[in-house]
Image (tube, rainbow, N blue to C red; front, side):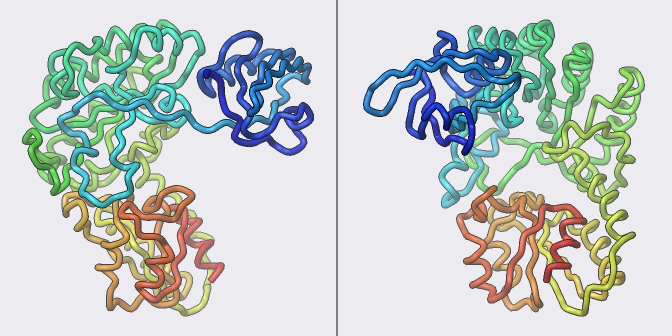
Length: 431
């Protein structure tokens, strides 16, 4: 049966007044059958008079005529759509490099344009059907987040591990013609999609500005579990320096030509190269921050602000967990904050034994590696860690270890903060 199962109903809402209950199935709005929550939002967003067709759990069908104030929500909550599975076999796919024993959902590859619109997930569009492309344009599902990687058709098919895929530039032109805004990314694989191929890709995507609003270049991630997969070279210190020497100036030049920043280089390039970051203004309104672009410059600016208002907080010791790549600037912040607060704040950079030492970001630190790094360590009054290490809302690390388990194993009090200097300072204030 088509339609959407009601997950919950907001108290005091129109839906509650109409006796709609969790478990009911909303079949249609104004005669249009519903497939997912995007259909529901699209068909209820503008009309003030609605005809809902509803199926009760016992099979009874209700028809509800609704008149509401402009913009008044109905108060219905539906579960997120089940993600469509990815049919690609990308040569750099991180999921293919995961070790055994992690949380089961981590092994699921999704490729769903709906989640790109709803959550900002990146999709390749290689599995997009013409009817779905038409729906994106008709329902104005904008912005979308698109993994381009390379625009040269043959190389793109090789990188995605799938033949017969639609030409990406044809798809992007159709979306641009439909007034869909797009944020794009290139996962850079040295010796594969760099050089002339990267130049072509940047030129092609910049040619679709302003429909294509941004392009991020991020380095591929390689783990020690990369077995029976195509041989790929890492982005190391020397490569990152050479890459930035070319592309940092090109990004600025392109931004001047287009009138605003367009091409963004991932923070990891600067961290690997050991080079200073551009000023935060070079990142515009941070359209790619969730992609690891501009997070460090933003942290540094926020750190300066936090240090200006930091006051003495006592004399206890606290240990802060961080990934290896973040250790340098985190240490600088903690040194100055220790001086201003009177606290003893110590950062511990956790080496990633789960994925391998080439993986250095904080978001991929496992609970078992934290335990290994801190066993026998003087933690002090509190152990603090950024919440990016945990599954949102569940307090569980990638390897399934919970915060409670971590605290019990290390015999310490554990607290999370949202990764910003301000929230870190506020967390210390509450001790």
